[in-house]
Length: 468
Image (cartoon, rainbow, N blue to C red; front, side, top):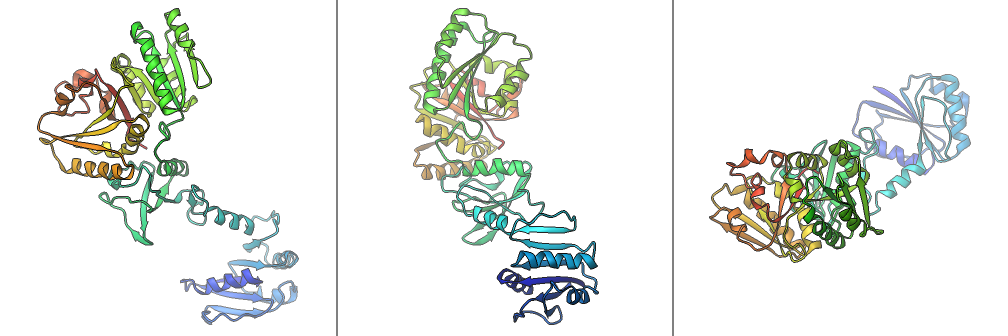
């Protein structure tokens, strides 16, 4: 049995003793000193020993301290009483661990004294009730935010997503609370509005997850970043395409209402450089790299420095194997522009595949379609496995209801790529996975519609990273 000494005076101390009497453990014996005796009906006489005296009296307290305690907890309402009680204890027990309720911002230079600041605790608890602020477990684990609970709002990107398609790297959803009931997570479990999620993971990762859960429509390219980057390599992009490419990027910038940065490398045409510079304004920055050394490293550094959330490139640049690899490693959405008109686009087309990557990026897809005014079209090839596809269709129909967004599902017996080639104009949206970084020649005989993205190279395409 471990002996614990509690020295109490005041309402907080009394409430603390009441809570202790309700704890489950039977391994501790509590010796409780009070200035004025109070009755605790739930106190087990075998576990609780009560004394009534003034702990600032050295004589009285020294008699009790003849026993071996592993810890002392002091919860008193008078600072002078607390300081004198600590002095009495230290006179007798030099190394005994003391926990003190600190209501006066007392300072401590004793390694075996822990001051519990009541003002900090109250402020932290009140903070938990603020909207859009994560609730962090402070007395569990290391208390640095590795355990967090998040309320899923109605318009969240996580609503109606299956647990199995949520990428959980360095973090986990360990419990769901719905209607004040605990629900254990499983791969087929679907998250619903107003669910309370209990998350465990690295504190920095959980902060990003929290922002992603709270993210609602109308924010793209957030949460990937806050700027749009048009990247032009004049050694790759045909000179006759650059002016049109810049105009289309300006149009997208006006639609998404985020700052546009035009980055030019390998500059080789003075007239075109002047044309681009004429667009410089408060919301459009022009950056020209005249040295063009180590382009990949500079590009990845630019993504971080500009806090880029969307990269725009020409089709010739995306076709370049090394550029495409660098774009994938940046882990931000990429808009590949073709030679077709962009401002007249009405439809965003998605081809369903055997995996469920489209469910992982559904929130971003709805956000883009909402801001750009696109209708969503899902193409389902019936000659392929249907179970995963049906769950993706269910997910998109649920989101369409939430966001009042029209959506069409086409069940096709013919390969959707052949059907889409007959459409006049549309934009294709695809998950940006590692298989898109393979050389095109290795995908010629593939039946995977994602690896065959280049079959629709004449159309605009958006590639969205699947990992949060």
